[in-house]
Image (tube, rainbow, N blue to C red; front, side):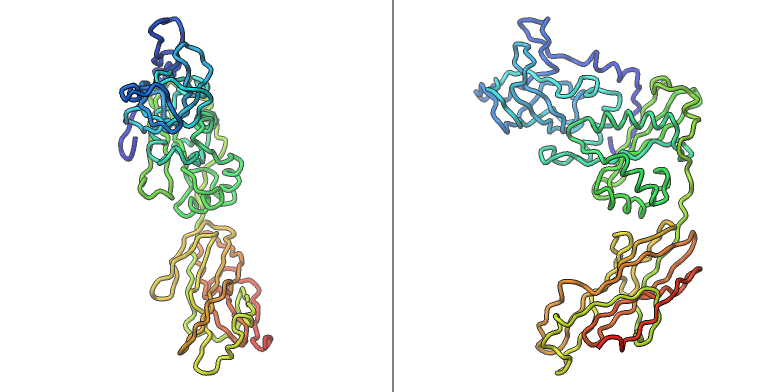
Length: 431
């Protein structure tokens, strides 16, 4: 389910799926378990008696018990559970069930039955409706490999992690990460990076800190949950999935589940026992601008870097109207590239307070009549860290130039509540 739609699924009914899910039975011997479904008749209608690799086949199976990307075994009609091959479910939520054959160990009759690859209670679990929505929304091609997922946390209405939420998170993670169509980011890596960003729970994730998290753990669909007790004492859980890397999925997908609190295997006290406290994330603001006419000789700056351009400039001594100058300036903060505005300033960036990693630089260019000197492969750049205090605006002026055979880049922090020891840079240090 997408966007603003909402489904309330009652756990009691769902958790009975493993026992009551439809089973296709062999017509000749109804006492034999013949799997959970059977191959559709689209092959036999075309005179095919055997199934081949990469066949796209229809499936006679209850769509409520499968999700896009699931694996199903192809088993004999006799009731033998030895797999003849397997397929990937390619149909999404609300579509007629279909699959593509990806493996075959023996000849596969066109009237074969279907069986789950994973355990029944894992295949059909309480959170399957959310898993179906997740795969339908974000899993574009189940034949190209798994979908990366980061299960972040489950918080209460105050943004806190609780013992009940952590128990639910563990269950959700098991059901998602145990399916072959998902590749889950390690929990330890998520927690470590969130603490580095000073974001103890998902409530504190801003657009920028979420991007920083994704740069570290890699592009992944982010899953979060919100859990509370209703006035009637029932547990209400909302699961959400979203991805910044997939613009067409704006708003993500979400499902609501309602159940007696005992269904979580825990009581009221667990909902009140806080395991991680929510705290507002202190922020600051970074502003970068290019100096209009930097006076480089004898200048002072907080961070200075230089690069020897002698090899690149070989054969061009600056005579004959040839000018060497900086171009294509860039700024990265915690790995995020900032766009430059037409006025020479870069886009302002709100950041979490604390240490921020900055990289500035430019690519030298030669200009003049008949000049065909390519830009060097490596830029003139400088990397450094800035400590941003809560509520502080740090304005950084970028100074750059080419003197002799050296490219120079510097960052001057004009407004700081605490000013670092500044370096004095004399250009005569370079020939």
